[in-house]
Structure formats: structure tokens, C-alpha cells
Image (cartoon, rainbow, N blue to C red):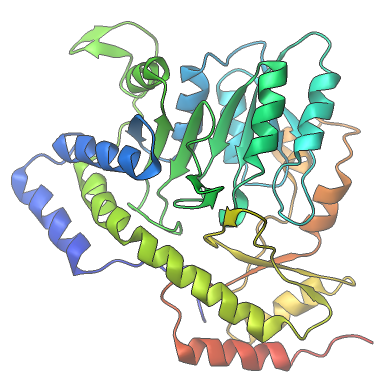
Length: 367
């Protein structure tokens, strides 16, 4: 089976971890601080706070920006559930809005529509998700946020190194969050990061992820242990250096994939977007005519590890049953019935591309 994702780990990562193990400092220590510094510099922000995973990063960012009980936060319904769950963990309430059909990202017009209806002014923030590695229309989103005086958090879990108008994902809003999970464009196994150029938000986030400690054994807030380790940071430092090369290979693979699929009229190819540097965390196509599930089965049966990200929109998830009755998000519902993500990771070989081309060509499209 050609895997949908494959961590790109080599001897440099092994050597970095070995060095940490030999040092005896394996919890949160100097490597974490070094990783934070390098990650902040890479993304063009003042601060980076390393955390246990991407979900913790969103939770910490919300807390750092003062979002809590009684507040509401706009989020897209087409993404992984960590985004909306983090809002609930913070004591706030998610407000789901629809997405743009071409980009799969949150629709800025829908954000403003939700804010116009917010007569009690309980919406305090929006979390935008740069889905599949394409950055949202941040100029429009920031304009709306400024108009209504709300905070902007960027969920950049799938967008390490992605850009909009030459600026990196995560650097536009009040805070950005990243995941370093094994499938991401760069990985530490698990792990995550909060980035911000606000000194205040960074200070609060650091306390929040470390038991509320202002200094050793002096606790000023009720908080969590969301720290990461020097072991993970050592991997991250190596991966960060490799990230531009990884992303460029993904972009090359995306071009190759488009060339293989452009002749199939039933398939809608992913859109790079104007002023976007798409880094293709996923290469996600749409299959028209109700043929998505049959095509997916054909791919999997043929050894292509294609998957659906995401088959159930968040407002229809069983865990939220009864919470969002009557909510209509037509574009989100349509997209969840059509999308398939195909392998695009940097480790793909010529032989694997040839195999995928053969499997594509043998599907019998219904007439």
C-alpha cells in the first residue's frame, strides 16, 4: 500500500536524539528553548511556546488571549475536531460557519455574517484553519476582525511554511498554533507550538502550559502541564531545517499528480489560490457525480492509501449531538461528500507514481 503519509526521518534526527539522551536532560530543557527560538525566527514572529501537541496549542492560545466562559468563537465545521474541542475545553462555545468551495477554508463573508447576527457581542474570536496547507484569505479576515474587534487565532497545524502574500501561516493573527504530529510536514512525533508577537500572550501561554508557574514553585494561575521534551525538540530542530526542502518536494509532487489527473472530467483538482504558497499537507481532490466512495474503494483495493479528510462535518459529530440542531452549512456538507486525499508526501518514488497512474486509469466511471 502506498501510504497517505510517511515521516521523513534520517540519521540526523537519530543523532540529535542520541545527543539528548546522553546529556541526561530529556524533559523540557535547553533544546526546547532552542527549538522555540528557531521556530519563532523561521515564522517571523517574536515568540514561540513549545507544547505537547496541536490541541494543547489551541487551548493555550485561547487562554493566552483571554477567551473563556461565556465567550463564543467562530470556527469552520470542515476540519479536525481538535479545533472546536479546544474552544469547549476553554469554556467557550464554538460558532460553526461555512467554507469556501475552492479553497476548503473558512469563508470570510460567513465570518462577517455571524458577527452581524451577534447582537450581544459574545463572539470574541475566530479560529481560522489553513486546511491541507493552503493559507486562508487573511487580508479579508483581518479586516473583518478589526472591524468587529475580535481576536484571530490561526490553526496552522497543516501549514508549516505555507504563505499568503509572502507572509508565513501563523504570523498574521493574535496567535498561531501548530501541530508536530507524525503525519505533518515536519514532525517531532507529537508536539506542537504556539506563536505570537504579543509579549503578554506569550507570557501567559508559558505559564499556562507549565502549571501556572511564574518562577519555580510559585504558581499564579490554575493551569496545565502541556510541556514538550528535549527529545522532541531535538527532532524538531533537524526537521525545521529540512522543512523548505520537504515542502518544495510536496509542491513538485502536487504538480505531477495534477498532470496525471487533469484528463479526468469527473475530478476537480485542488486550487493553489491567488497569492498563496500552498505546501500540500494533503493533495485533496473532489469527485463529482456521487462517485467518491466507489473511486476511493478502487484506489484502496489497488494499493493506493487514499483517505477522506474529513467525512463528517464537526456540527454533525456524535459528541455534539443536540448542540447545533438546525444548523445548515451547505458547502461544508457538499465537500464532505466529494473529497479524497491522495499521497503527496516527499518520500514518494517514481514507481509509486506509476502505480497510482495505473490505478487511476483502470477505474470504470459510471455513464
